[in-house]
Length: 356
Image 1 (cartoon, rainbow, N blue to C red):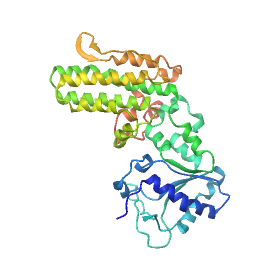
Image 2: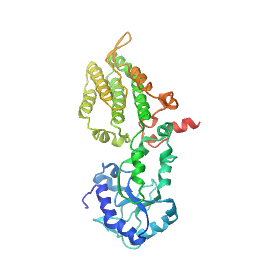
Image 3: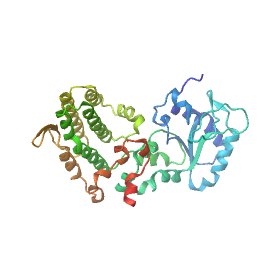
Image 4: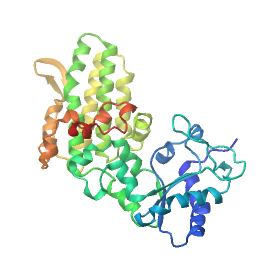
């Protein structure tokens, strides 16, 4: 049994010791960049031994410029005939794609190596994800990009940037522009505004299961607010809490856990109110975000504990100067995350709606 090695570590060595020297042998004048980005738990640094069963192993992307795009098939063919059959005990030879599009390492028995080194023209690769040049993105364009695509383009590691542009393009996508960030925050708080009073109603009726379902939705939105405040893209559901742990907010995580572990309806309502205020305090301490003071109060004439999140939404929207996004229907913003289903992970929901 091969001992697990994190994919980023494995592939940085694979590039340094094997792939880089082979490309120099292929053509010392070839200008290219090499990385491990895109799909996969290894790109996020969240891989373990279980990850080794598909689309994991010695793999990476090689990017060339437009002038060398005609050489892509030749580069892949050269690697097929010159790569060793294994590296550090891991096979570099992969199965053919299965019905679900996945591949796995197979024992090498000679002949050409069916490697998992993808070769792309750099601008074309990014355009496939963004549908536009990185330098031409408007605020509205940013909102039409599914967040998981931005995760895939900005996580991982660049091993070599001979083109001098790969790292620059990734840095340009590091996080949303300020006003897009404000719209994302407003959209999450708007979800809270829509349902925060329902929590008290569930308490009133002693509906513990319904209350916990509502509380979980509120927590989900509050944790996503934290991602925006820490300027980190939200990974899809499998890695959501791993990603949240990377934000370094243990007190907020602990408070969220207390809400879900509590079985006393009134206590759930109280702790959820504490969570609203804790996240709002983090928001008010964040650079570039307008300060909005709120306290917990009753929902008009009903004794339901709310933060009146609509006031937070108004405060955020008032700081946005770009009318094309300030006046957007917030229910349409961040649909890929609000729907919280892997069906929508890479779905350009807002873009589709705007094109209809």
